[in-house]
Amino acid sequence: MPYYSYVLRSLKNGILYKGSTQDIENRLTIHNQGLVNYSSKHMPWEMILFEQFETRSEAMKREKWYKTGVGREWIKAQIKE
Image 1 (cartoon, rainbow, N blue to C red):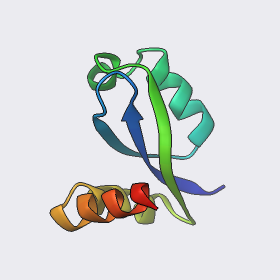
Image 2: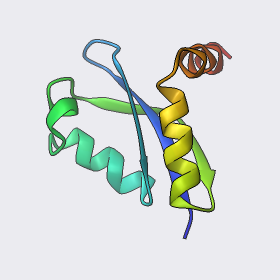
Image 3: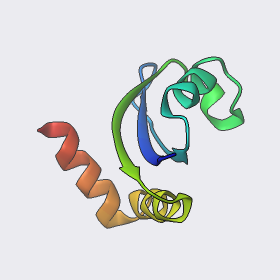
């Protein structure tokens, strides 16, 4: 089963949330139900980007990269396209 790294955008205030999961559709639902402490304050969320990986470690590595300065700039560039 594949793993995903993803980026959500708050429809309330535009904040970006980065994460990783094995069930991408369910994860968005969980965020929008307020079941994740941090993201519950910024609901509702939309999925703006996700990438698929073969292993959990690859997805987590990409999630960590999203949170770097280079990763944040890359996300901005992807959103503009």
